[in-house]
Amino acid sequence: MTDVIHLLPDHVANQIAAGEVVQRPASVIKELLENSIDAKAQNIQVFIKEAGKILIKIVDDGVGMSVTDARLSFERHATSKIKSAQDLFSLQTKGFRGEALASIAAIAHVELRTKRSEDEIGTCIKIEGSEVVSQEPCITVTGTSISVKNLFYNIPARRNFLKSDTVETRHIVDEFQRVALAHPDIAFTLVHNSGELFQLPGTKYRQRINNIFGGKTNEKLVPVNEDTEILKISGFVGKPEFARRTRGEQFFFVNDRYIKSPYLNHAVTAAFEGLLKDGAYPSYFLYLKVDPKSIDINIHPTKTEIKFDDEHALYAMLRSAIKHSLGQFSVGPVLDFERDPTMDTPYNYENRPVSTPKIEVDRNFNPFRTEGADKNPSFGSFRKETGSWEGLYTGLNSETDGPNEDIRHIEFESEEVTGNLFGAARTGEAGSSTFQLNKKYIVSTLKTGMLVIDQHRAHTRILYEELLRSITVSAAVSQQLLFPLHLRFSQNEKELLKGIKEALEQTGFIFGDIEQETVEIIGIPTSVTESEVEMLLEQLLADFENEVPGNNFSQTDLLAKSLAKSMAVKSGNLLNTTEQQHIVNGLFSCKEPSLTPSNKPVFITLAVEEIEKKFM
Ligand code: ADP
Ligand code: MG
Image (cartoon, rainbow, N blue to C red):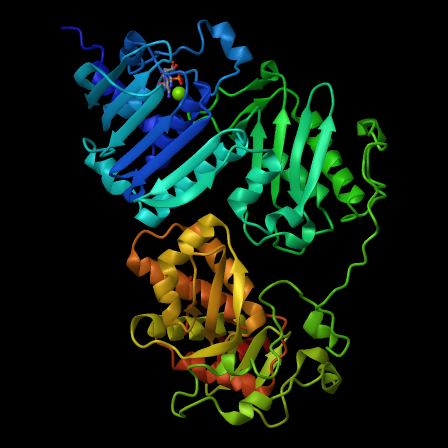
């Protein structure tokens, strides 16, 4: 029998390697940005067309390449950054695998122009699918410019796998931000289809963070500094009161490289313990410097995960440094009885500015509210006040023209009236056919048994169908705001917002200028109060960030799902009989009353026979 093993041709090997290095346009941008930084560029411009699917072009003013290097740079395992395996343990550069350019050239049309300052004439190379199409001397400025066109043109399966432009752009912005945050001294621009998304001048860390995340960020940052033999920590954490409902603004950099580390993230969260509301995530921008010998970045092809030698020590130091900062800037308890004194490090108090104690006022505290209303202060459990109550009935009283005037004046029963035999469990009124159980379920009788409805899920279903109708069929009514709201969003969120603006307007939002630093909102859906808007939109954008919608249909669906969930009454909210009955009626005029938009059961039934069995 003949031998069967043969070596794969280079272009095939390169395509396979590309599968690991290049998942999407954003991965190309990351690799090229890192190359420019390794080449000591001070100005880096990124241009993309159609979310990088058509064109990615990166122009830098770095050291450039000689004629030979330019040609060699596209070979696999061609790198100027390490010479021996030993060098892997003292890496000062971002690249070292020598794979990126070879991989990218295997799956796109690539054009490179490069020149060193000592050369008169530069080099221009065109490569398509690993094949050099042309190489010639050319007139160009010092530095390197690389265009990557038609990514995955020769791998249709991968190309089809790419997500919508909105989603791919978001990935690009994410990578761009990570690199830009790690290197504040370098000027970066990002231009998408000729619209400028970022223009970041070279500056210091704090200012870079502000330039990326918008003007108000500065007030939110608390500096963190720690210097020990094995670790230097610098950077910022967000004050607890500004914690967000998304993981969006959480960044670790180790030796100027963005990394993901659930373990270190846990250390930060632990430092915030007791300071955050449920479901809120602290923001952080933390820069760690460790001896390159003590980490291994080699374990992940895209190099976002690294392994530390002494993770436990890092964890403890990080946690204690952040706790200390939060305490010192009077945003957290200063005394920490839990602190392990062996982990303590000498702090230099002399050079720290004295901070005046601040009085914290809870603007939301209302002494006249019943206790139950305040039990769950987290977002979404908003206790409806008169006026916003009609929200509950949107779409329910379709036979009448507008919201019933009486509904506007419905007051909650106070808890006291429920002090009877059934305690808080029974909040229905005599003679009514529904009861509320545990402030969570609505119980109603059926001819053949009993119906137990989850109030939050039911209301979510009602609002979801209502919202879908307004987005796709007929727009909902808006209430004009007397004073337009001006809300701040990150660049990323703003991009997302632009993508869903039209659909949002169908639900009753009216946007003014959204190109400025703040987004102007002139009108809101009638079922929402002004104070809820910010949280509602923040949650919505967070859902969009996390869910990655693929097409238009699911965009509408996701929008309706997210808004419905935020707007629906929560468990824990006391409902009076009228409110209970409106939910029941609304639910059963839905197309799909038995399931929530995310397919969870809305109600259960208990047949009389089942009840009878229990008495046997
Ligand atoms: P690596 O970065 O791992 O070395 P790459 O395939 O990304 O591998 O790049 C190969 C080589 O090409 C680099 O080592 C570097 O010498 C050169 N190179 C790539 N991009 C640039 C650039 N923008 N400026 C100067 N040299 C570059
Ligand atoms: Mg590289």
